[in-house]
Length: 176
Image 1 (cartoon, rainbow, N blue to C red):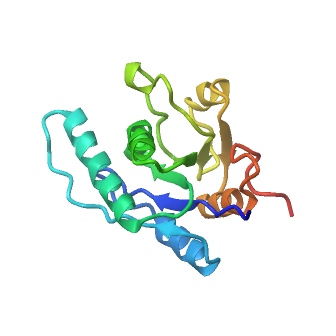
Image 2: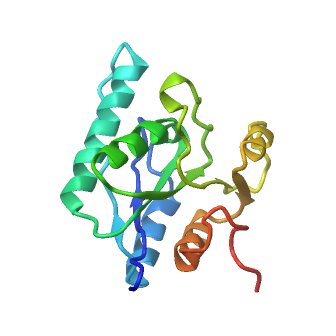
């Protein structure tokens, strides 16, 4: 039985401009005939409670992913403030019976793991630093067993998807 490549979900930003690499990654994934879901960034209402705003974003993403009808597992990719929503989005996908095989956090802050995230991460996590500069949170990410990779998000994500089902928490792009 042949394994299906994971569908890469390029989560939109949360109240920020989309990163420049997002469109380039979507184009590269499609050019390689890899399953790709690119939800649009809807308006983020100025909610007085950040949790309500985050919940609305997660609901929008879950609806879009469900509507895309992915046939294989999911690799969730987020940047900036949207990285904080990955535990909730992963839980929503598990509830919808979509397997999540990895999370990629690009230039974002690691999600807080509290009561609701005790079972997160449920799949390997890769943290990408596009500037190459270390972040103070990288040490904590490594202690959690996550892979921290400096480099171009397009190259890193393409490498992760092409190497699948090898562990997605590998070493980033293969040399040479």
